[in-house]
Length: 124
Image (cartoon, rainbow, N blue to C red):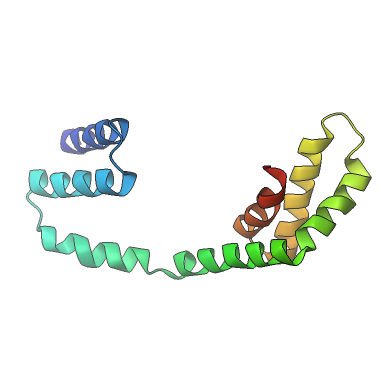
């Protein structure tokens, strides 16, 4: 447990000195392997197996679908509809954003696609 805490402390320090997060976690994992005496050759196949999971494959495609719907104008029409319904109440911009993301998420089946499509319009 102490070795794990030391490794995580090193990861936090590396992130604070602005080393990229992937490299900080990689250095922490290699350090933890060396400190515990585990074989380091286990890390690469395990990392590849974890990164090639089905959920991680589908996520960029859902984001692409959201961007495609945003460019097609679907999200802007949905945003105008929700704005006409709840846009006049106090805090209407936040309510419009949340309700549009909820409806878009129900249409596309992915919250990440909804954020990609609606955020592209609402952030500016």
